[in-house]
Length: 162
Image 1 (cartoon, rainbow, N blue to C red):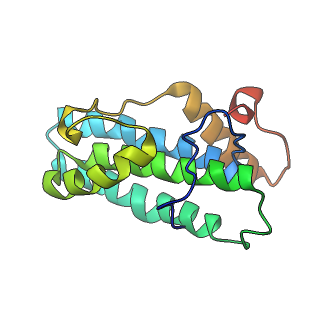
Image 2: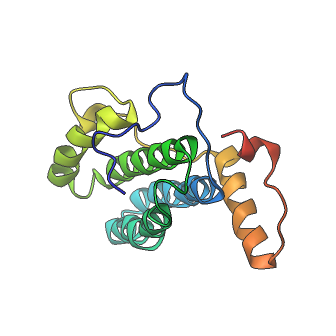
């Protein structure tokens, strides 16, 4: 999904609608955030790199493929805006997670992605390192459990409000 030049949800006055896939991705993003701090504390840079790699190839690409399903006419603007916002913010977080491992590449990419993710600053190096949020993790775990069970329950109210 191409976000360049499109509304990525920066205007808070416009409606946003987050799909179940958007909420699921935010939940999945919490796992590598927790793992990265453990891997760095144990000097397991190989495992830290693998955690970022798996996040991108297993989860982010699944979200991107899902976002591309259906034509723009089939999905209303609030849902498109929500999905683009999720994609951009997840990508920006992944860049911050990967920065200690691949600093030059992430810096270059972050300079382009940061304005779309409502981040300001001269460098990714000066940004806070991502930390896991247990409230967001609950939403992602609920989505995964719900899919595995094959039931169609609504996500918790805290997840639906995102």
